Length: 251
Ligand code: NAD
Image (cartoon, rainbow, N blue to C red):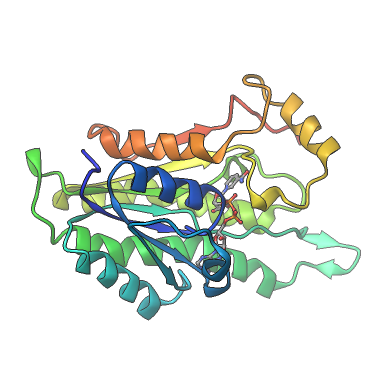
């Protein structure tokens, strides 16, 4: 699929992987609607031909308004990329007692339910577009994490949320196949974004050493390059791609 002159939605579009994806899709000729929390949108670097919309991915009305904005561009909405997400730390059981249920649900609500919320509302709009060759209409790319497979100590909620994103991939691809909409998931390893802002330089170097090749953290533009490749490649569907330099986390 050619992403020139299509509309695209990118959540988490004010920062990190979402920000890089916005830049890449816009550079490739798409009209991008970048969704993020209002406070993140306020401080984001703004690009031409990108609409920045403050919306919480967990809110149906706010996401619908962003989908409507993408449709109102007059271009067919064919690319939807879910990058909005939050991390957390918390063990099942610590000296303070069992993990707080609210903290667990917040992560699952943003990372899993938010991703589903965008997928369900945006797919309805993609399904309305004129089909391309062989009935293809568009693609949804969700972002999981290698933590879905090898969560570390303190990642229980994050791993559960990302495991849910992985789990949605095949059934969503099957559900949406009749509309010509593909669904793919990228499971990044360790990518150098503001999400790692609190990580010390020495620990970053330690992390990089654990990546077989290349022995460095991934870059957001490399993630965006993969999104562009997925969008372009009509035969990629219902698959989870690890994007991690062959990283396998040890306990
Ligand atoms: P980031 O913090 O730079 O960007 C995440 C963005 O999501 C932020 O701009 C934030 O404001 C936005 N966001 C958070 N909650 C939101 C909500 N409710 N509604 C709308 N927007 C919301 O982080 P990133 O590294 O770019 O992460 C992007 C995605 O990639 C996340 O889902 C993250 O879990 C995943 N991921 C990142 C890494 C990594 O190493 N950076 C690894 C694996 C997975």
